[in-house]
Length: 86
Image (cartoon, rainbow, N blue to C red):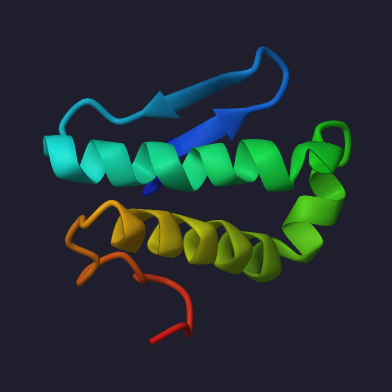
């Protein structure tokens, strides 16, 4: 998993999250990865497309996660860690 807190596995329709995260962070990672599952399922068999446009796809997933987290009343102060959405 490297530095990632989680990932969406399109091959077996699962979301994997690191164990050593707080409950809040685990929930936020799940929301982010579920955003990938819904918005980026067209990338299932095209990892090259994802790699070439990774920043775009991560920004989209994080944007969705931010809005959902905000709606749920979750702390979003550290939600935007690698995008330019602030």
